[in-house]
Image 1 (spheres, rainbow, N blue to C red):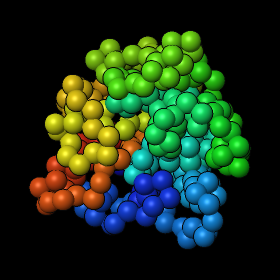
Image 2: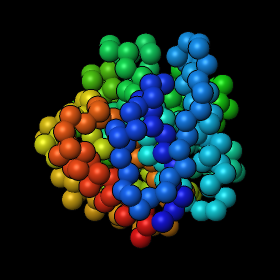
Image 3: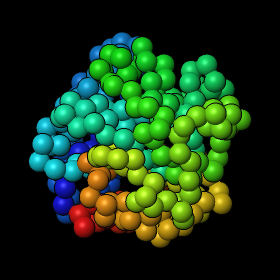
Image 4: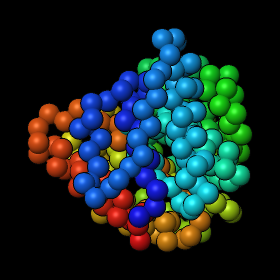
Length: 256
């Protein structure tokens, strides 16, 4: 099993321990720094700097796996790889585009800006303070994104970001070099995953998503596998069991 890092936060909110419930066989390094009593941006930079430090330390030994509470944390994983001397591209599995900026977002939800920030969006907020080297648009592949806001659709139509489906994505879609493979669990049809913060219907099955991720992981190009779990605290033990099964299957892919 590759090195597993657990960041039990949704943005700068510490999640209850059982919200991200990993299989009992996984011994993860937990990133849980004391955050300053400051504005949200400062707290996020502190948090993602700590994640980047752990990713950089693990990257020297081979591929790493990050499990987090939302997509924005992927910025810490990306910066960690860069600090380790890896120059990755990114493949982004998500039900949503995550290509908003602060100016384009109507909701203001920061998770909806994560991929755009990785490509240099709103750089003074998180990327600049972390020392992020922004990716070019042609270094990003967006998979699924079936639930796009109009501003996101307009941006993608004029960008060099490659947009494909879970069924169609293949190793030939990977940019050259090492890859940061990111999956937001909400890419799976909402009927299979309870308690998601932003559920999206009419999505691919978990089996289809696992198969697509397995194809890419088998390429040998994946330097880090980033798993975002943007779900709420489980309401029942049955919800916890379903979620644990999804994480178990994803982590098993990383071990093959």
